[in-house]
Length: 153
Length: 300
Image (cartoon, rainbow over all chains, first blue to last red; front, side):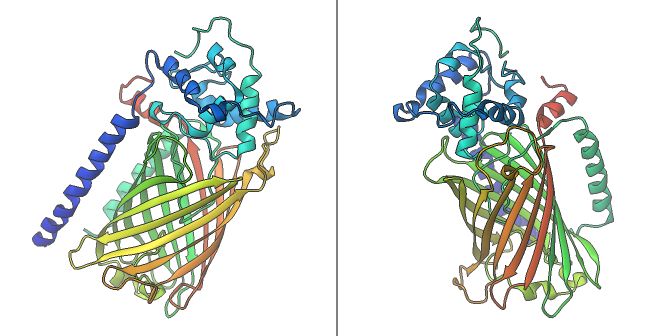
């Protein structure tokens, strides 16, 4: 029995050590938490979108139900972190800011699709593409916040 | 080392405490895949806890049919890391009901952005007895006759196993396609590495959301198919003496945060169970991590 335990520990220790190293690597690679200045960094991500993607047209633009359907999806999947009115919370930034409203629909779609994993936003490509465009249409329907420094914290 | 009455009492109290905690956090509408065995590359949202219960009814050649069940607690530690605890049990008809052990699973997203194929590394430690019948994966030379052994005998052997999977998945025009090669090692030194696979494809019935919150909107239903089986082991790789299953899968994501899954599975050769009927129910709770941090004095 003792021999079995010793052998098990020979496997278990490297396994736990590997898991620990993987978690540490992930924390270093992806694990920056939201904090002071995180909104600025998050909005920088919008500009990281490839040019080809930024210029994509929104296929839902002009569809009469797209804003309402996008609003429903936003409430179901996004409001928990970004706030019910997209005003931002401690967990995620305001989406009413000027940078957001100035971003192209393609750039917003790109962030939604890829997430901002290192800042805690998961990718939402599990939502079908038309649903992501419905959310983009909803977000682009906001009026720009007058004070672009407000919200979010 | 075999789980006993004290373990069951402890598990029962822990579940009761967890249920009380969950009453305090709001449910979140989930967008869950319908797979039971196959994994796509999507992880739990950070800070969210998903509580799941699954049942598998299986027919058994040369033995009694069974009902295996498990509870899953899936927590999003980070956007790139999900950790999960399984508690397994089974009832073999005309035999007994037993707790068969636990599994601790971790999934790590390997790439920051979406790519042509998206890889996730899966690492699991299992401490289960040989009476475990949930068939959450099929590996090596697993065959249906392994499950014909009476519970009293099978439950006396406890296995420690590690399992690695590479979860590969992508979205194509509303379809999810996923492939999961796996390797497993029973930590007893004489056991070889075992191989297996799972593959699946699924799609929502509608790709656009409706305007109103609705239970029966087509976008709430996801349907697909999955196939899984063993590929032998390091000493004798290949398809001989292996079992394989094909299973249509379906999920119903309700606006209230509940997800229901149903999957009838069919054995594809004589080594497989003839029929596996699986169903599951799950609910996702957002902000669970923040609530727990708050209880222990952290910043909310």
